[in-house]
Amino acid sequence: MSAINVLTGQGTPSPRQMLAAALARQTYGLLFGLIEVRGQRGLSQADVAAVLGVSQQAVSKFEQMDSDPRLSTVRKYALAVGAQFSIAVGPHDFTQVPASLETAANTCGSALPLAVAAAGVATAPAAVQSHNVDLAMLVRAAA
Image (cartoon, rainbow, N blue to C red; front, side, top):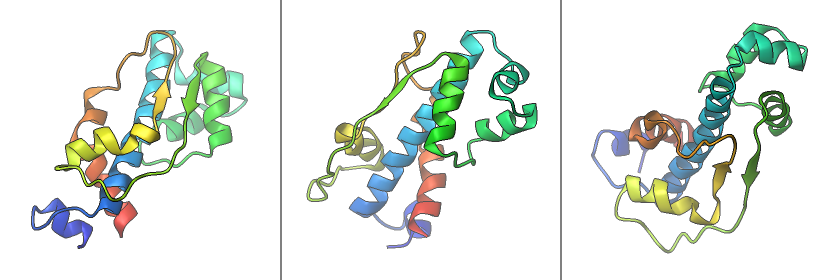
C-alpha cells in the first residue's frame, strides 16, 4: 500500500506506516516542546544563537519542522533554552494493529515515549496532535 493511497483514503496504512507516523509525531512533539520552552523563558532566536555561538538563521532553520537535526544539536539547543527531554526505546509489536492512524499515533509509541519534561510543558501544540503533521512525515517515511 502506498502512502499516497493512505493519504487519499484509498486504503489502510500498514503497521510500518502507522509506526512511522507515531515516530514522526514524537519527533515533532520534541521540537515543538523545545521551541515552547524557549518562548516560555522569553528567549528570542537571537538569544539562543548567542548562547550556541551560531547565527539567528541557524536557530530558525533548526526550529523549522522540516529540519532533521542531529541529536547532539537537540541537546545543545535544550541546554541553551534550559529544557530537558527524555527518550525511552523499546521494541514495537507489529502484530497489534490499531484501528486508526490516530490510535496508532497515540499507542504505537507507548513503548517509545518521547517526552519533553521542562518548565511546565504539559502537552504538545494542537498542530502536533493533528494528522496533518503525521501524514506529511508518513509520505516521506513510506516513500
